[in-house]
Amino acid sequence: KKIAIAYVQYELDSKANILDLQHTFSDPAYRGKGLAGKVVKAAFEYAKANKLKVQPTCTYIPVFVKRNPEYKDLVAKL
Image (tube, rainbow, N blue to C red; front, side, top):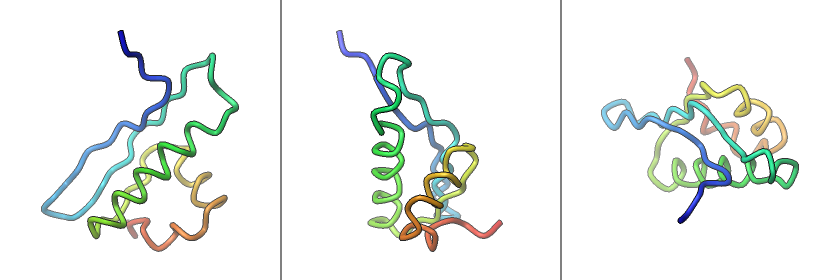
C-alpha cells in the first residue's frame, strides 16, 4: 500500500493558463524535512515548463516564494 507523505493539491485552469496551488500537506511523521518545499518546487517547475502562472491560494506558497525568489515571476498578479 502506498501512502502520500507530502503533496500539493492544485487545480489547473488551462484556458487562463493558471495553476492554482490550493493546499500543501506533509505527513506529521515527516514534517521538518523540507518535503513541502520539494513538492511546491516541483509544482513551480511544472508551471514554468508549461508556461503557466501560479495562483498562490495555499498560505505556504508566499513563504516558499520568499525563500525562493527565482519563482516570483511565475506568481499570477491577481
